Image (cartoon, rainbow, N blue to C red; front, top):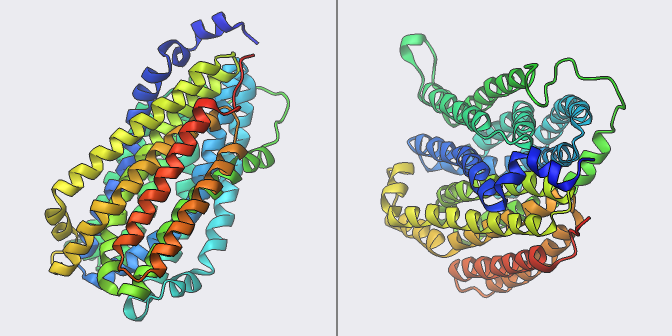
Length: 457
């Protein structure tokens, strides 16, 4: 292994220091990942022209589809961390062998998960209480979305490898391209293109457009990594030890799956509580407002991934303090980015609501305002927590942040149940989300600052 000074001289990420690395690598990633959320908003704006039932169907299906997507995101984060540590050790050939095997393994995993999650789609939709025409559209939407895990998982894995070597522009370009193609596909499939003989297929056109656009971006990502000059080129990989892939990736990914799954479960439970307790008005508002949440969530993962890449290299050369600072920087930047998004939404809540649902009633508008003004802050605090966690993942610490999460979510769940049972309306439930998430953010920041997750060599 190279000495600390030699490794730092060779590694541009370490030379920049934690703040600059997390900012310069994380900001493009945050924008690229947030663009998924933005395109979801554009989807919703287009879907909203089809009426409230279309929004209900898209919201329920998209919320359930988030669960298999969590698996892909967490596996790709695990690969990012493992590749970063190997590159930090100077083992480029070993990193390339791991990378090649991981790309093929992810393809087979995506096929299995896509099929297995598509089968129970009717049960998933029924559990949210959706009925009528919206139920049928939601099931169709969910089946296509879950089968669409295949190109999305490949796109996640290829861009994770790019982030491991410090690339920011290419992953950003691929994500933006996918979202542009998605937008064009939405317009054609949602409303039809009479001149080309393409009929409208309704709300499910949005998910067909998403799957097709991601497939194009995934193929381009694979091509980029096939170039011989790439640091992790998939072409002519040197012979050597065949590193295990599935076991190590799943071992590192499953705690993250639980962590992000807990966050998705909050939205699912909130949707069920809203639909069963307050009716379509609040659920439609959630369909709009939680899509805005995804911009904050995805952007925080960009800063977290940057901290993962930096910390993964820092820990193998004994730079414990720098690894800790990368977590603090990611938490700060993710929180600030999320706050900016939320304040922008709050300043334009009426225009945003009417953009997504032109026929929005005063009650629906008030429900969106209520969610963003109260529960929206839970997403900003959640972004802080996710940013901090990114550094721990880079150091290979997967269990300890999960333990912290379980403690924090136990507090959140107790607060939520008490508020929901109080019968005081939906706003106390929103306040419970903010209070519980604040506890979670404080716990994770404390873990990064003083926890025994990284030591000097």
